[in-house]
Image 1 (cartoon, rainbow, N blue to C red):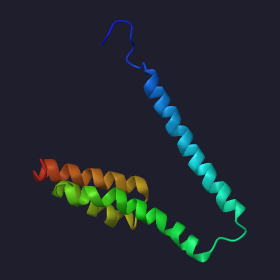
Image 2 (image 1 turned 120 degrees about the vertical axis):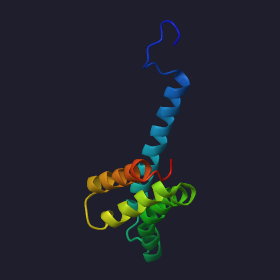
Image 3 (image 1 turned 45 degrees about the horizontal axis):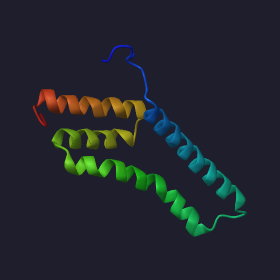
Length: 111
């Protein structure tokens, strides 16, 4: 580390990037809120499309690691899915973590 720099210093480019990302996120959320509130009635097709967004985002986040990772990650995802149908989120995280640890350290899968 250079002299005079703390471990928590942020250069101006990083700070600008964080600020711009925050502004873009806020503008997107605000724009969606304004758009939905400006409509007197949301058309059924638009409402159906909006209802499908969370599932599409979840599949987009989960499918690539499931396909591209080892069996340890697949086992954890399947265990999390099974427990996610019945238990709250924190329990699902613990079960997923435990499944990965058991697969890697208990059975030597994925190491």
